[in-house]
Length: 224
Picture 1 (cartoon, one colour):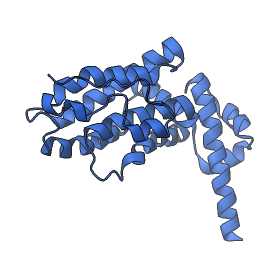
Picture 2 (tube, one colour; picture 1 turned 90 degrees about the vertical axis):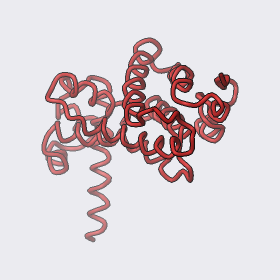
Picture 3 (tube, rainbow, N blue to C red; picture 1 turned 30 degrees about the horizontal axis):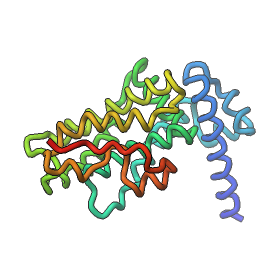
Picture 4 (cartoon, helix red, strand yellow; picture 1 turned 60 degrees about the horizontal axis):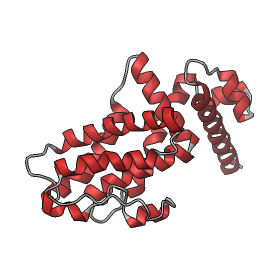
C-alpha cells in the first residue's frame, strides 16, 4: 500500500511538472499563475501545494531539469571535443522536442535577467563541458595555451544566444544548422590544425543518427 501511494504521488508530481512546463513555456514565469499550472496538470491546488510550496519552487525544479541532458553523454569512454559538440546538438534536440527543457531554459533566462540571478545552473553546464574538454587538451586535441574553463563558459554563452536567435527567427527550426555554424567558427580557434579532421561540428555520426539528422549537412573544417 505504501509503495502504491508513493508511485501515485510520483505520477502526480510528474504531471504537475509537465503542466508547469507547458504554462511557463507558453507564457513565462510572470504571466503564469498556480491556477494555470493546476489546470494544465489536471490536479487540485491542494495536490500542487503538497508537492511544491510555491511557483518559484516549481520553476527551480524545471530549471534543474534542463541540465539533465548533460548526463546523456556522461558515460562516453573518451570524452573530448566531439563530446562537447555532440552535447550541444543533444541540447538543441531537447529544446526542439521537450517542453520541460524549453521551459527550463526560458525560466533560466527570464529569472536570471530580471531577479537576483543564481549562476549555479550555468556553472553546472560549464563544469560539464570543462570535464569533457580537459582530457582533450591532455591528448593534444586542444591548443595548449587555451584555458578550458574559458572555452566552456564561451560555449554556454554562445549556445544560449544562438538558441534564442533561432527561436525568434525560425521557432528553432534551424537550430542544428546554427549550432553547426557556431562550432565551425570556434573549432579552428581551439583545436590544432593537424587535429581538425577528427571533429565534425555537425555532430558525430552516432549522435546524428540518434537524433535523426542524417548525414547531408556535414561541415568538416579544413585543417590549416
